[in-house]
Length: 138
Image 1 (spheres, rainbow, N blue to C red):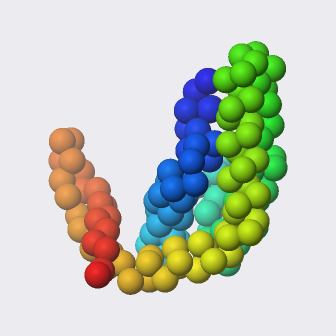
Image 2 (cartoon, helix red, strand yellow):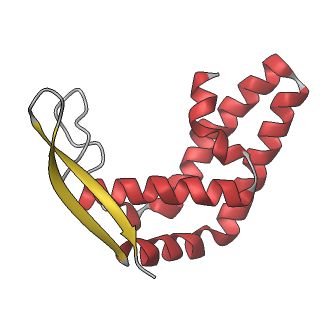
């Protein structure tokens, strides 16, 4: 259920999915542009590629390899509740295939119009930490 909680937006209505996928895209793009990548166990960058180059296809793979299989596991345990999530995930996946390229272009356009302000702040232990703020342009 914890895994499901993290990605349930992919199984909800289209507007909810679009809102959260855009927020994730913006977060990954910010990490890319600020060289603020997550390091994996081998010290390699997990998010070292520009997400604008692969977002459309990555979302389809995410639906196919993670979201829909997880929803089907839920369905095997909960029955009808899981069926609702499977259908929602499949509906969003199919709509993403039809409209995802256009949505990705919209996200790229909105993100490049975003002003990123990065500042150093002092944490409670006296160490400086970098915080990024987003301000959407009109």
